[in-house]
Image (cartoon, rainbow, N blue to C red; front, top):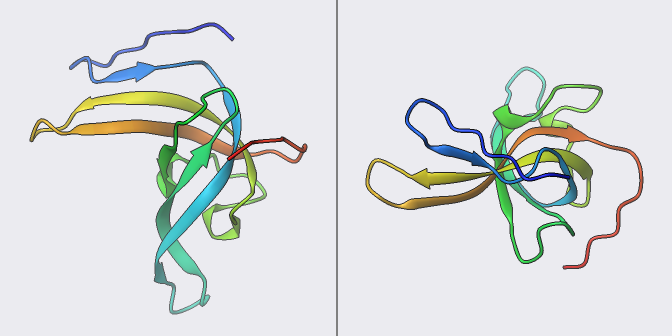
Length: 113
């Protein structure tokens, strides 16, 4: 994979690599849908052997919807994602590494924690 740099109009987003593979290590769901009874919305964290010692935050809206959706995710689910670095927020705080375009993959992936 080659490193790439992509910036928006305010130069806030920097892409580390095009696509990486990893696994979900934490899922937090926000609320229960009263109709379906499923938890909806939330966020999680991904680790990857390509980015040792880094946890990537992802919001449920960063998922590419396929056969599996955010409520179907569990810890240990294997995923592909685009890792990005976010610059400072409005208050000047570092927002840290994030994952976008998160999609579930089926093949086995070994990740050391």
